[in-house]
Amino acid sequence: MNQLQFIVHDNRSVLTTAQIAESYEIDKDRISANYKENEKRFKEGKHFILLQGDALKDFKNNKPRNSGLVWTEKGAWLHAKSLNTDRAWEAYEMLVDEYYNVKENVVLLSKDQALVTVLCTTADLVEDTQAIKEEQHEIRKEL
Image (cartoon, rainbow, N blue to C red; front, side, top):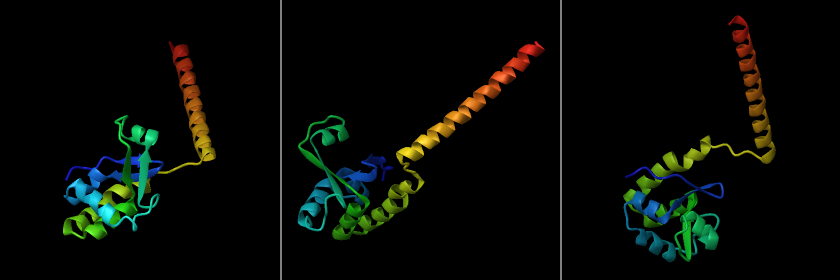
């Protein structure tokens, strides 16, 4: 199985239907059929995100389509459960271990936290720049 391309939509890790199908080694039409057969179990916003209009266009790099779904971690889990194949279970375990856990290393900052981080970084850069200027001045004196 190829390494999955990491996708973030609205600050959430998601997978496309094609990615889940590849992971579970089944046809993507089977994922779509599984969704239709179990539609009442899948909750929008919790298990999948419905992309339409401009949001879909942006997501699909301006390729026109009427609508599309991307799947959250819980959505991928429901597919593994309802497909109930050995490969689906193995792939889900990999998704949890390697794909969705990337979020553990991602730190989301509030606007205030981001501003403080930018200001601290800027202050460090100014300090470093001042030190470089002083060092250059000393070198010029010596020359």
